[in-house]
Image (cartoon, rainbow, N blue to C red):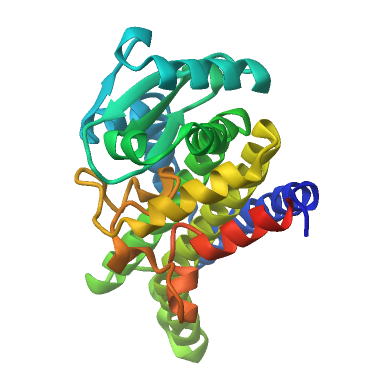
Amino acid sequence: MNLWTQVDSNKRRSVFLIAFFILLVSGLGWVFSYYYNSYAIFIFAIILAVTQGLISFYSGDKIVLATSGAQKIQKKDSPELWNIVENLSITAGIPMPNVYIIADPAPNAFATGRDPKHASIAVTTGLLERLDKNELQGVIAHELSHVGNYDIRVMTIVVILVGVIAFASDIFLRSQWFGFGRKSEREGNGGQILAILAIVAAILAPIVATIIQLAVSRKREFLADADGALLTRYPEGLASALEKISSYKEPVEHASSSTAHLYIANPLGSKEDGEGDGQSFFQKIFSTHPPIKERIKILRQSL
């Protein structure tokens, strides 16, 4: 598979996964609504989750940058980094994002913002110290591809859907714990079967939702790798950068599980990244990023 087919494949898969996600939300809502014979609880969960999602959508980037310890810079602070971001932005045809540096020895980077006009790129000091110019260009091109592809918007939509599912499931399970529910549907075998099915759905749905969320995140990483390599016309730069990033085993200090999917590689350290040899099935489906070795292999196959 070359880079062009990789781009097309991941776009199709991402659309499919998000469509399946929406169907999962709708199905769960129907189960709960049918059980209670009312749409009120599900509608309330949607309103609350969407409200939280909108707050994250418009202010999430500021929160992420602040909690990561990122400091905004100007051209004089890091001329080489600034010029790379500026030149690649022009090549990609998108506005130049704000540029931030994080004082951390772990090499890593991320992009955030709701669209290309409100985007930021942050890199660690470790990344600047360890990568040469071609490798740094590969990483920046990857992050700019996230910006240009509206990946942050896609992931925000997915996070909102996860929130809807988790909140609706939590309300339903709490109502069962305290004995609420529609009495008429609990009488007889039919009511008991319905209650059991609803409880199983409430337990499994958030797990399935999380798996889908992580799958979307992994697909977007593959797509950004491919688009980034096409932007620089030098896949080896990004491949070599990923090798250096993965060889550093210490975590990024201010990274967390809630922001890990933003980074170019899992920032939580070697014990958390699940990207080594012998990766189990469960490690794969619960990982925020595809295996580094697989990403490097795809990039080098395109040379």
